[in-house]
Length: 170
Image (tube, rainbow, N blue to C red; front, side, top):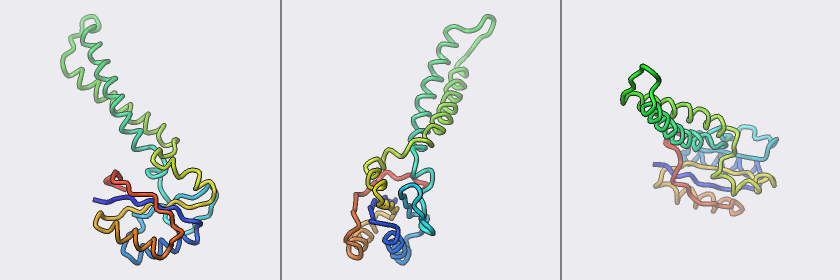
């Protein structure tokens, strides 16, 4: 199980140094995600992808729930008031629930890609002011070691906590 650590760094040069140290500490670069102000050249820094930058995952989850509930309601209405000459059974409820969940997840996921990640809202002003947000996903037993290493070598790095709810597939 991994935990996500959040650090604010003063610039990309410092971020490169931290990434190099993390790589030496055997943290894979696909577990390091960097977000900077729009237009900032990041070079070879591991940039955050769509899953980290947007509310895609949250949107899909919300769409599944709302779409599934809407599908169940639609199915119940269809069963209660069936079209003339058609007999609807319990399968109608299953089909409408699945269709509603899929359509809801698809639509909400598309909307979620255009919305900034709500978990990163607290960092938005710092990033706009030129700081670099670094998210590092580390095994639970390495959280203290990595945090202490970064604080020791980079006292200007601003630690912003640990998120235990990272996706299982970052």
